[in-house]
Image (tube, rainbow, N blue to C red; front, side):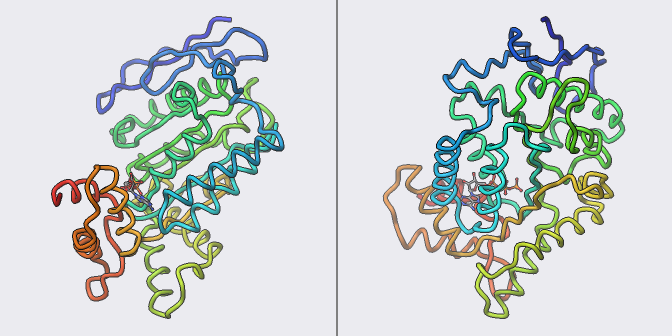
Length: 340
Ligand SMILES: Nc1ncnc2c1ncn2[C@@H]1O[C@H](COP(=O)(O)OP(=O)(O)OP(=O)(O)O)[C@@H](O)[C@H]1O
């Protein structure tokens, strides 16, 4: 069963003419089709080669083991994001248990830079697909700035994006799609994948319910910070910030904000995003933990004074109280490198 697929775009260049290819879904026991990944390279997707079928649902004890390992990774490595980690864990555990989930799992991460959105998406990818070769085949990253730089090419991008998703899911149903820099996404582009995110059986023989979509956005970050700051000013704990309020604030904000890739998006209107996940602004103590982690990673001796100095310098918002780091933990590695 031969398959041909479109090639991915050359980053930041006008798109080459794209072949109209016939996408043949992999049905049960046929030989593996070549898979289009973002680099345009064709690789197969035989999910069993690593001793584990990544395309099948997790059964009882496997599901429990997956949840426990993911929970440990999130709790140990991610600082100050109790809301995000709770929701991610619940959503993934539920989705991975089902043989035929009703729809793909769609999560939208929101927050200031450096708060852990990409970091968490990497932890998810690593835990879902432990083998690096599996990650290469099942995990697909799209960077709006890199892959969709020219708003005037939106028509081509729409077709291309549909082809990539259709092609990837037809051979690797449990594919993970990560869209970063969503704020730079040309308006309307993301709606082109709407049919794949809806509740359906299969479209032209391809079933999308097992796929997972993650959207990473800065849009909504200011609103999250407003809510967090308001809580802090009313002397309420970070843990008391209500998730449900934030979720509705986020969906409204990204729909109405012209600086968001979801501006006026039908995906939002039709409620196809399952979870809007807030990444809270990081406080001094979280930045300090990031610095400690980085000091260890770079193999330096822990120097408490130095760690405090860097963490204090990074806590800069709002200017009068300096509770949060406006860059999160983003520049920690270079700061530690320079200071040691
Ligand atoms: N909450 C966190 N806990 C632990 N480390 C973090 C956290 N947030 C950020 N980091 C560290 O900072 C680095 C940069 O963060 P990350 O790339 O996840 O930010 P981001 O939220 O995706 O930012 P942007 O919106 O600019 O893409 C991570 O690789 C990680 O080392």
